[in-house]
Image 1 (spheres, rainbow, N blue to C red):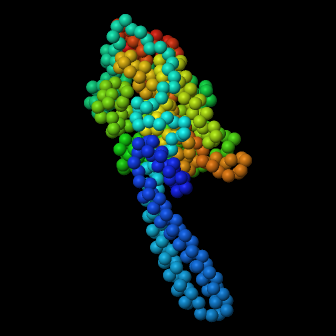
Image 2 (cartoon, rainbow, N blue to C red; image 1 turned 90 degrees about the vertical axis):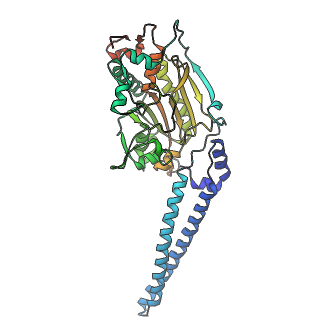
Image 3 (cartoon, rainbow, N blue to C red; image 1 turned 135 degrees about the vertical axis):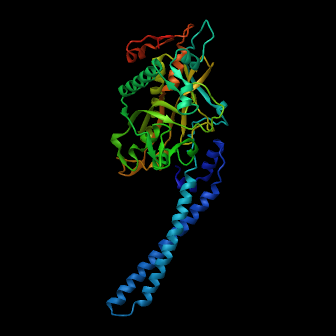
Length: 426
């Protein structure tokens, strides 16, 4: 959430930010609400001051045994006016807050300008794409031939864009998740297993609501939402708290299932594990001080990369341009893994510094030692990694001509020493 003072005092900065993000929002409407709100606040304060003066006079008249009925009637009228203005103020503050919740974060000055994903910047490429003496298959073709994926039964049980993992497929998913958690916890991240259902305040604090309401699965009777990512409960771990500066940074890692409608992805990645309604992910999350957050973004990205390096999967790091970044992000790196069956790079992680945007919405502060004053923390998040996409990348990069899939060495201890998934032996 943006500070209304920033919008009030530096409207041009916010206008440029919206333009660079390719978003159209009329800021004059927000500023008009803010101006009207401040006028009412001033009027209420003046009325309260007048009421205090009248109350003092009433007290004096009563002490002197004089008639105070006229003054008391005036105070009654002032109270009625204050009550009326308070009602108007509450309505204005609600409208202003709703409008501010729709404003995206301001991109950092270092973020490249751009209109769409074509303007993203390649930062680095690591690993070499495997060379095959045959035409590589897609992961869904491999999975069905190995009898470890079942899309038809998933549709029967649920709907399209769901999958059943079975036999070695289920085992490989579990191995990937456990491997990731072990790597991240050894690097100093605290493991969290969060609720999969959260309340509306949690969704709003993390930036999911109201902007992405159509992407969320809501349990209406309970007014709870299935999480689209563990970022949501992790953001809210310290909601409405003031953290000791010496405790920062907080480093969290969390496995969770994630649930997304994928409402805006009609026709995209219809097959396989790339874009499904339910998937597993290991999340990385940081709470930091403002002056360290961009260095923490670099280390967060490297932590996510470590998984790809250990799995020996070829990948590249992309810095997103202003118009391609997510709503809450001030700066984002995407990790894209090479998928030979699809013959393309696909996003497998997105690592973002959200600066104080989520912290303002969630009211998360730390007490600065030097001043003793509370300030908003900065929050960072990243996939470390999406398990289904990691499985897809392993299958496509480690496939054999006969349809077998070699298990990466680092995962074999998590699969009882299994070295490969073979046709008829999954």
